[in-house]
Amino acid sequence: MRDFADLLEARTRRPEAIAAAAAARKRPGSLFGPHGKLMIIAADHPARGALRAGADPLAMANRADLLDRIRTALARPGVNGVLGTPDVLEDLLLLGELDGKVVIGSMNRGGLAGAAFEMDDRFTAYDAGSIAAAGYEGGKMLLRIDPGDPGTAATLQACGTAVAELAGRRRMAMVEPVIAHRADGRVRHDLGPEAMIRAMTVAAGLGTTSAYTWLKVPEVPDMARVMAATTLPALILGGEVPGDADAAFTSWGKALRLPTVRGLVMGRSLLYPARGTVADAVDRAVGLL
Image (cartoon, rainbow, N blue to C red; front, top):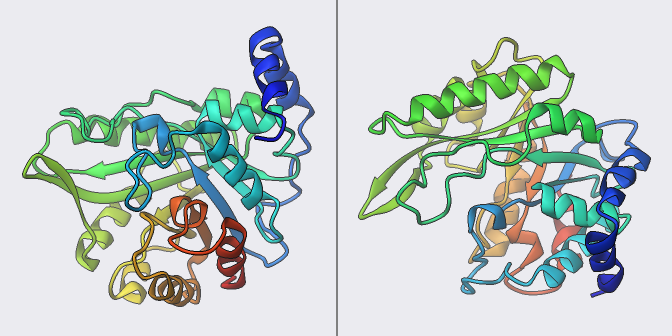
């Protein structure tokens, strides 16, 4: 990896360099890129033990490789943001990759993938205060709603508090809502249009104000009806590496034509494309904007 030795040296001998790099970072003048949309690269999966991309269960386990992929994506024209947990964003800060980028800190990563407590999405990473102190533009939270799990109430309350605290600091609150349940010991997401509508309307009402709330949603069937359920701006997420990339890009393109959809948040689907290079996949996604 490029600059890997320097990164390790800074982390080992100069930990204060992280705060210095955050303070010196050039902040973007707007949330939007030259295309008038948001194009964010997501890299917060490893912090909840979700390392799979496509058929490889440990695709994201090599940090140097992951960072190189993120750096390649961030360097492509039209990419104007990144979403990550503190460890990833601080690596990128030390590597000088965040100047002029919209930076979103991932907040609740406690629901570890595959764990018995996976639905317990506790806030174990950033909070609103640390996001503001670092000069980042917002925070992202996962809101999995399981009607059969009383623990969902605690997640709702925590997300509501985070939305309010981010808004109090004039920072974006990016909420990713989904109806979920356990089946055969695994957490399954209900991606039907009615379930997505319910999840979005719950998320939109969180906190003391929705002034700074954005939604992060998957592309699902009957997307026009789904997005008609809210006036909040929304970003389409990429999810797993698609088996049919052409179909996925076509669906994302259609969703982007809806009035409330204001951009893309893409992670594994672009960083680990089923075919072609990271640059090719990112450029194709930017082209949809």
